[in-house]
Image 1 (cartoon, helix red, strand yellow):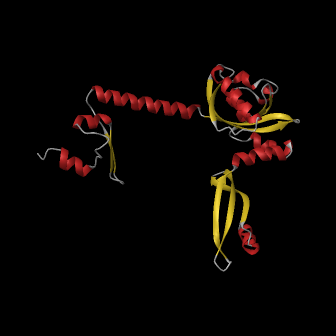
Image 2 (cartoon, helix red, strand yellow; image 1 turned 180 degrees about the horizontal axis):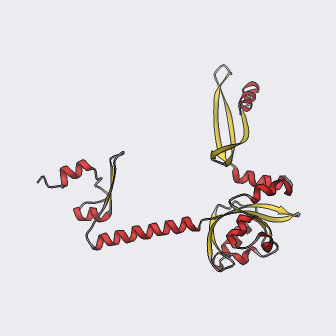
Image 3 (cartoon, one colour; image 1 turned 90 degrees about the vertical axis):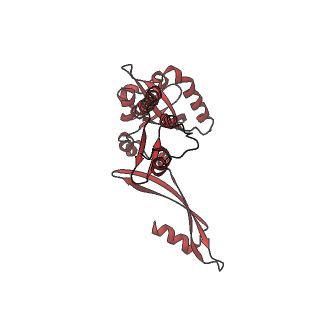
Length: 249
């Protein structure tokens, strides 16, 4: 990294690009792509940098999968916690263990099987549309879909794909991440909050949360109703509550 900046300074290179790995937590590495623009003083001497950085981990993994031999990148792909697959409209050409685990099969049993076979019927058209866009060179953002496992259970997965080739023919390199537990937890939280709000409304009962460090108070809508206050206008604080609402006795 120091050599990168030093070279740019010495050569007075206007803009340089550098890719490097970073540890963001124990045993987890991301790749960062960084543009550094040299800033010059009026006399023309370098005075600093303006730097833009972005996470290029997924692109890096995709490029590595295409550039290095299968023997060299297989261990990296196989140990990835995310599912990684190469497929087209009809068949799966490759899928790592994490991807196979999501579907509930072994990797070797999935080769040359239709990927769409494991997609929930309601999401098949959506996936076909994404693949068509990728084949046309269009960008496709992350999306969620449901896969049906061998035992009939369902998994909600987050998907992102890149256009690639397999044996000289167009294919899709896909990254899969199981989001089932996260989405289930989010739905349970929403349901719990909804049930609490309904119970408070029916029983004329409200609640609030108070943070000792920030002195921030958050009221439920039911509590606003109890005190006859507009939640869009009244911002609760302990001081206002004690001085303006609570009876002095």
